[in-house]
Image 1 (tube, rainbow, N blue to C red):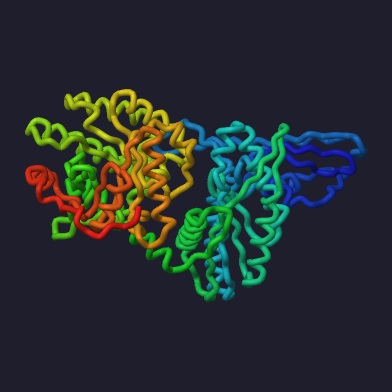
Image 2: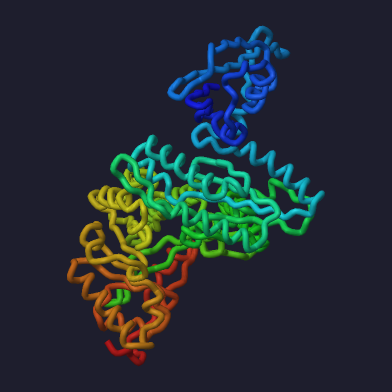
Length: 538
């Protein structure tokens, strides 16, 4: 521990990590002209996590400390202790280090856990309420990636300082993780809690400046409250605040949410889904079904789209919408995506050997798969290992993935695939914020019109005009266009009339297992003759 004493005997901020304790405990002017006793030295040491005083050397200063004079003190504690099985080894202990964060000087996660235990007992003994506020800086990794670790550390220190200045006097502050902070309140009211939240948000809304850069940070906040005057479980309070924080993040960030019991229920359901999907992946219950795409001009088969299904073995076959939580887990989502790629390419090989005229198989690629910067090459290696013509495989990427934070990785992977002959389809076109620039920049072969537009055909002139324009846009850019979700003959006839190349939907075929899909190709005459129905106006 290092401290500096200067004019009028004031103690300056010592070196981290002991400064937080001294700033809170030594708000005084010591009488430096008086002799320093061993008891006073012991008091300072105890404040900073040094309960024992094995040895000390006192150096007396001759005369009082005047303005402009300085004195530096240094305290070091190294206690040798023999442990069973580790004879002769030294054990170094600094209890304070575990209770205070070295970077920000705030309390540590361990200290917060201990404080929560005391608060739980106080809630029972005194009937006090308790509230835990968890605060997480939004997209803070971008600061480290853009400006470097030193800038990130400086921002964290300034955030901590603002929190200390704003709410340090009303609660127990701690740094819980890289960019996560916590504030524990006791005996609060709804009104005081609202006032505190407002103060935190206003303090962090102010810009941060360093090295000529100005940053604007936002934060997401989760709050868990116990106000029934009964003893609570500290771990449950932390978990509930974390669930509320997750909801704030999912709600668009830069907001706060208060824990509700339904969040716990949702969390349990999500965990159950994740366990089920992992088991299904390991036991082969995640299967691919295949939906045929039909050329509208002559009603011939033009390829399949591979669609994931969970065959639970009890008669239930669930679409991905029933287990979407699995795709929120990055590692599990990537495992599922790799399984889909391997299964679809493997099926294409089997059909090729059996001489099934499947034309091509479209594979949906998720955002998580593009976190692997070698995804394009991995797909090409899998294709090469099966001796497939790359033109037999099509990669479908949704508009949301094209416009995601990984868009550069998406672009690079698509270019790698395109150059080797794999076709690229822009899925769900028109549902997001894609522009003509994106169509120009991405190596797209096919645009797929989202089913939401097809469903509304005939319900208003605007939708009809938009779909017509999409078809014209695709053809002007030398791209093919496919309509999804076609369910009526009127829709099919309209799409054919305006020049749409192909369509898929329940009108033609539902998603079916591979064996059934292969059988469908033997009976093309069973496709509906949609040319005889009343038409929609082009």
